[in-house]
Amino acid sequence: ESFCSCLAVDATDGLVRTMIVGVDQVLLDVVVDVDDDLGIFDRYKVQQNTQCLAEARHAPLIKHLLDRAEAGEVKTTPGGVIANSLRGGAWWLKKHSPNPAPDIKMIGMVGLDAAATRLRQELKNAGVEPMLDDPPRDATPNPADERSLSTGVCCCLIASKERTMI
Image (cartoon, rainbow, N blue to C red; front, side):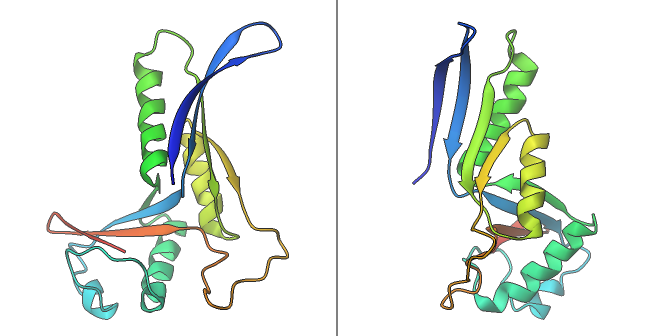
């Protein structure tokens, strides 16, 4: 379950500061325009203009897109309903608030991977302080789920203004 709350904090200097805190399953969204590569759907056996939860068969596509993101070829952004709301709030407050913007914090869980590093940096760039925990470095993956130590990723393929999400 996710939530977002606004808190007033009494600081040691006697001033009251506002803080906005969100807790959710934060994701790294990988957004790719594939109009010039419509064969990607056949290569990775993905039905165009659908939404589905990732399965083991999607792992090669997700790896391919994350590799392209690391190479700077595709766009990534923090995702998940609360992260999106916090990013929007940070942008709006920076643009419209006459007062100093409140601290905006995102609490969530990430994996032991490059996607977590990218996600933390992109939240910071958006004005959201990432308070993301990860599994202990000696954690053992759950044998029933090879993704148990991975950061959540949502791949969004855009073709002819239609969106396919995995």
